[in-house]
Length: 324
Image 1 (cartoon, helix red, strand yellow):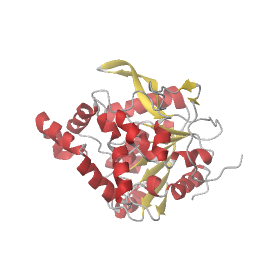
Image 2 (cartoon, rainbow, N blue to C red; image 1 turned 135 degrees about the vertical axis):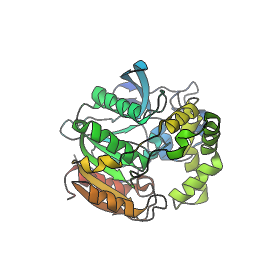
Image 3 (cartoon, rainbow, N blue to C red; image 1 turned 90 degrees about the vertical axis):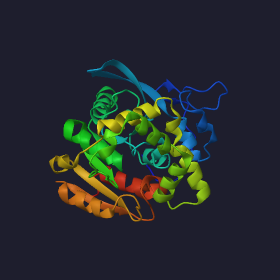
């Protein structure tokens, strides 16, 4: 099969692995569980990817919960049993829509690709619960060692998961990795009333727009639309409770795990990242046992959004063993 990387006008399929997309009553193609604000998004790739989101039941057996959690994700349109599937995590307080521009190219590159929303709904929403949820999703649906891709704090999730379940991971891709932060720090000791006030501020449009300006070197009109994409999940009714629960849980602290990871790892940094220092990526490269390093030009904190073709070329080469 010949595959090439070319951005084309998105046209999502009507079914995914035989699962009929849930559509709204007026037939707009968006799943009924998404917030109404999805209709206001202008980015065609975000709109197309949003129409492909499905919910799948993930069985969980935890101390305070036994049952299935409906988990949102983008499922691959094809299965390739002879290749490791690529599983995309997202940044802190984000969603699988973060992969709107890279996901179509990954499929064009003949890679079986999942984009997963890390557990955010079920309390407790601490690191252990998120790790267990990802493992059960992998065990139930993916079932093969995967190439686990984590940007920013998603890299922390990937390191935490790999250190606990090494058998589930074939290779790692860590992008502008924020793996040296010490959890949520003093935020875990905040009174709940103040924590909720902080979370309300976190989802405010001005603060999100500022974060986008730092993350992307894009025109203001595009940044406004990307801000709406990036805060869409904040409109879910459970979002504030989940964020406060994660905050007071202490978050992630994985620095001690890094030297234990022996999986082949691609460390990616961006030429113009204004959020995570490239020096931290170099430090990560030195501490990992089996890693290669690449820089993505002309991109900020999220190269898979700003320079998706270059980024996907790295992933494709890494998956096929061309990067050493």
